[in-house]
Amino acid sequence: MIEVRDVKKWIQNGTRRVEILKGISLSIPAGQFVAIVGASGSGKSTLLGLLAGLDTPSSGEIWLDGTPIHNLEETELAAVRGRKIGFVFQSYQLIATLTALENVLLPYELNMEGSGLAQARRLLDAVGLGERMEHYPVQLSGGEQQRVALARAFVVEPPIVMADEPTGNLDSANGRLVLDLLLERNSHAGATLVLVTHDAEIASRADRRIVLKDGMVVEDSLPSVAEPVVAAGAEPRANG
Ligand SMILES: Nc1ncnc2c1ncn2[C@@H]1O[C@H](COP(=O)(O)OP(=O)(O)O)[C@@H](O)[C@H]1O
Ligand SMILES: [Mg+2]
Image (cartoon, rainbow, N blue to C red; front, side, top):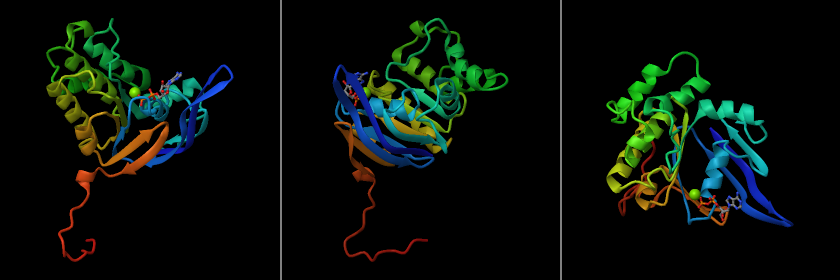
């Protein structure tokens, strides 16, 4: 579903080349919930932006669903991104001059045929904002704005949802609500979920945890709490 092959990202700073990602390879199967963790500055947001086609790698390849996106022109990239990926930012990134409903409708109108009105209303209801559809972002709390952003990310029913510290600006109750809605998108709708997080508890709920350090993958594993526990002395059991 998502294939990353020896991806590097560097910034040319005068005569100096600053390497932000130093050769990342990974493969994320459809439906997996992956947490990307690591210290601030380790390259998490840069990697997620490349996976989402928001930015292009300096070298290497990125394939989404069999489509190579590493060398697409912006127009083509926008089309792939628009249909395949729902992206959630830490800072919501709603359009201030549009109502909640209009914010949610926007990706639908840009990427799909027909009216998305019923779908947008249904999703706003599902995130608990049925009574706030005509509100502008400034009239909503941070938690409410992030729930609008979730409805917007889900409106085209993308096969992949990506989120960069989506609970980072929220209190714990709102953070939990947003996380539950993301997890539901993974477990019920079957969307692949790639989540950048600082939160060890969130990471422990993922199918897989990828640790970045200085632009490299230093660990890629199932979270320890999800490892199968085998009782001492138990016979290995055959599958099925
Ligand atoms: N456009 C840029 N120009 C220069 N340096 C950048 C740029 N974007 C990111 N960086 C640097 O790359 C490193 C990784 O950044 P980032 O991907 O945002 O890390 P994280 O999300 O893990 O905190 C940081 O040291 C950051 O300062
Ligand atoms: Mg970041």
